Length: 290
Ligand code: FDA
Image 1 (cartoon, helix red, strand yellow):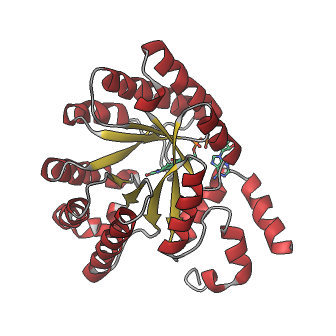
Image 2: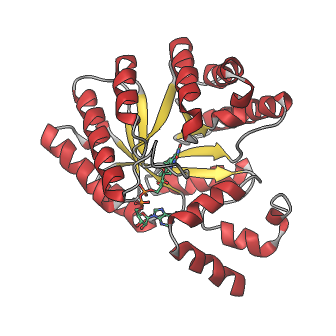
């Protein structure tokens, strides 16, 4: 059913808010429009766990081709990949080899998304291996996980590029903070650690991936108190979400990078976006009625 949905007109209209289209060309056109507004971009091919090795290899081919297109353009665009889509379920070695192939095909930074908590250990193993081999990889970490502060401390000696987000998966309270206030507090702690590392000469670029105006304000406060210039860190936001805030950040001289998705496997990703904010359901309902 989910595979048939993209062809249905009303669903296309409803998904338009969160993604410019299903093709790479759509995402790159979206990236170009953002670029004109002073916003950098990251693109990602939607999709999660794969069932066959060939499927994971096709994802590598897709990203290598996408990166070549970006290199031939004027775009300041990076990619972000999901390791389960690169065959993490078949083992750390396979995912390492595939991520390595993508990273070695480009001079730009290749971001690794963080997925469900059961994948964190393996994701860290793959990230470390490719970071040692190719260097140009960055990692997403989630402030809702209780373990993340320790994980970050262990990663810092690698001088990594890190994107902090709150976390988008349904996790049990044994592994994740249940209260928003705790997730937010940890986001601020992780931001503090990253910005301090940057101030102390770290080359890894800190990205704060959030639409939460309080988290954005706290980040700027920490940077100001540390004396860290605005060009030393970046805000990451999702395509179509808090557009006003994206524009305001650019106007006030901040670095902004927006993540755009493309591909036909948008269903789980889209559901996470709807779950994050009940008001999105009204938006979808309005599109269906129009
Ligand atoms: P929060 O959920 O508290 O929302 C704050 C405010 O932002 C809301 O009040 C609303 O105004 C707005 N908002 C947030 N989500 C919205 C939505 N869907 N629709 C409309 N408005 C919305 N997660 C993960 O587990 N692994 C990953 O690799 C990534 N990668 C990633 C990259 C980037 C660049 C971003 C911005 C986000 C991710 N995420 C992610 C998703 C992240 O974990 C989180 O689910 C969302 O960013 C929402 O959290 P906020 O920090 O925005 O705060």
